Structure formats: structure tokens, C-alpha cells
Image (cartoon, rainbow, N blue to C red):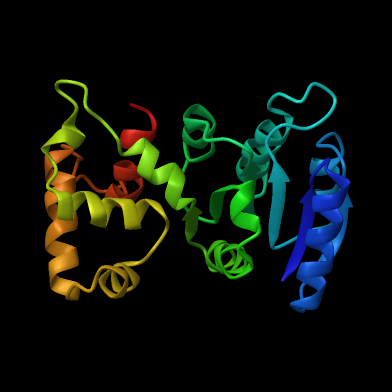
Length: 214
């Protein structure tokens, strides 16, 4: 696939360039800030953009804002954002439109090469890849009245896998369940989270957003 990297750490950026090249991917641009990212995306038309959240000049949310704009202006371009820490609001903003061709990984996960490459492939294929640790921490809800508190442990496990971007078939394999059991648990999750059945709503995406935004 064709990729653009935006990462201000020279060591990490160059390491990713070499890793991706070794895997047969084409890194068409490697940037150390988010300022020119949109211009490079428009110029090269990559399959996926990999961007840090906090980048120069302010090291706040430049990478995230660029990622959100890419998703709005270039919906066919996948976006994988990297973060040093779990930042729930950033994740919610990134997923606010849909959970397709999008990913959110902790930088520590990049060291686990197979998981990082798998995330890129899932995003390129139109899916999502949310870091398991992000999902686990987001699923910890004890507040009274929180609809997630209604879920059974099995339903939480299925929702966790869904939020990581796995398909129903992949969830079944991951949790050693039948496909029908996965579908039954997902329907229970949707009902307990009171997600609409109306045409035009993707309940899988809404389920992820419901706890990201709570």
C-alpha cells in the first residue's frame, strides 16, 4: 500500500519507513510535522496516513486535527493515529463520523510489529483498529446509570473486540464462540445501549462511540 507518515520523532519515523519498506509498502512521504500533511495527502493520494497526535509547533493536537480533516476531505484515505497515552476525547473525535478506515494505537504497540502491520491492513481494507488497551480502559465504567454497566462479562468481551475493529467472524475466532453466539451478544449490546434500529444508522459504529463519548 502507499503510505504517508507524520511523526516528529526522527528515530521512530525512520524506523517505520524502513519497516514498511521491508514489508513491500511504498512510503511516499515522511514528515516531521503536521503542517504540510494535507498538502502531501492531496498530492500523493495515499492509501493510509500514519500520524502522531501531538506534533510541532505546539505539540498539542496538530496531528489529530489534520487526521480529522483528512477523514472529512479524503474519505477513501485510511487514517491511523499514534499516541503516547490514552486520550479518550481524541479517540471520540477521530471516530465521530464513522469507524471505517480508521485506527488509534498507542506508540508502544508499534514495537509489536505484527499487530501494527495487521492494524494497517485492516484500515486499508475499510475496517478499524483500536488499541486493545485503549478499549479496555474505556470499558471500565462504574458510574451509576451507565448503560455499559448493564452488559454481562461476555457482552463486554464482544464489545471490546468490536471496538478493536474485528468482524463478527474474527470475534468468533478470537473469543472461541460460534458466529451465532457473537451475533446474539452483539444484538444484546445494541439493545442494552438503546441504539436505534432506524435506517441510516450503523449500530456497530454507534456502540463504539457510545462509550468513547461517555
